[in-house]
Image (tube, rainbow, N blue to C red):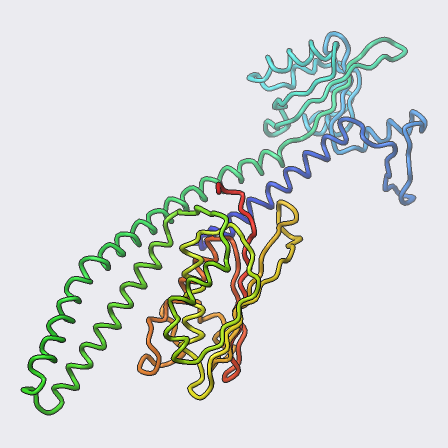
Length: 427
């Protein structure tokens, strides 16, 4: 069995099919409406230019060689002329097509549509979609009709454009849309399961863990002297492990809550957000004698609570992973850039860098650091669940932005965040 396509692959295939359909439609419209002054024909003698003033013989050669069917009808709908393309479509030689009623080649269920455009076509140009009875099957065509005032009287010119390619694309688009809908349903189920897990983590798991911590702490505080050997050490390890589990459960809950569709973006002064975070870490900053400089951060449209968590995670990491013999230096700097490659045109974006002079990490792990529970240092030396940067990336993704990291061991780290200044969603 072939592997199923991913959600992103389906979206990309849909986009390509849309582009092909639009290109084909534009080409057909240009040919049908005569939006050209000349034609370049690749013949036996190479490329030749034919203008609309070229002799009638040249025009007939073009009609004969064109990829679209062409017929001329009289007032009774009888075929006075047709090119080879139309004759091959209906599976008859040219001499047998001339003199037949064009109506005889129209699929029965489309006769009413044909009759209507045939009658109206003597008054004004028109077009309609019908199925032509071909040699082996019925083929979808677009008829473009116009009247001609020739020496021998009025006649109707009909250009037949094969719509098989467009119809196939439409079917693929419908199929892909169905697959996308199914994928969305699966994603919604997955998100629901994640929410259910978060509920279990926040209630069913936290309650027994809380009791473990309470009774372990009581045992240590009231009966520590009664314990012998490695008893006190084992008890401390139980309490420390329980606290780490508590932190991990809380972080999983925070991560799962991001699955909710709460894209309530509001204009937010990022300087105020960073100032609030720095106030929270005021004691730690003082203890470590850290130097934090903040540039002139802009006001952009974000989810304030989520972006606050982003800066909280990055600043916390910069303080946590500082060098033991050197005060932390943290810089938060902004700049505005223009992304020239968005589908809707130029899109103003804000880029913010958060740099530090901490212990850094090997650039081999630059992708892994944004994964769930990814730790580059031992839990005994540095606290945490290893989920902070995963939460950070998910928040940035929900803001339709990007985050990247650059670092070297012993030389600090730099995180670069790119966010849209404005969103098309409601403010």
